[in-house]
Image (cartoon, rainbow, N blue to C red; front, side, top):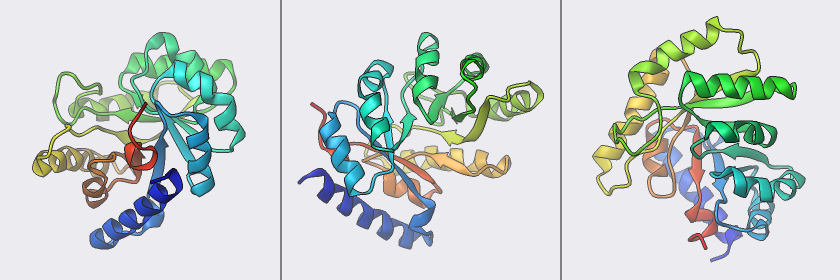
Length: 223
């Protein structure tokens, strides 16, 4: 199936999942994750209705940036952000989902300050406890938010929290990770939760996601 058909099927499935969870589809933003796919497919996704495009690698985003920006889509950087790539990513991304330390937060702030920009960020939280996954431990989120408020970091705007569930068929494990992020959101009276991908977005909707990061279900397998 083509990108437009995939997008339509996905929207139907999101609507059904929202109905089951007694939520409105209007609460959900879909970030179409285009890593490994060319601008032609991205153009098809935007034509079908995608308003947000996600990329995971700074170098790949740099190559596609002029074309994506020309399509009028918002750009989300969702991959691990290395310190030496911060300046370039801040220049390109409307949203960064992967801020996971005070040091990285500081670098993002100063990079945004240099170009007189306010950078939207999500804090990435490792709710699975898997050592191979990036993200801060859940118990550190509150202290980092307090530090943000007490430091003159006016060039970053905190949007919400992001997490990645384990790649598993064990629904209970996936649900536990999403519930943990939701609990932090409720405790701290936050709003946006970036969680849920092609294999687990229905569970994420059920557990309160407001931003889904969907790649394969829209674009197919990567080249």
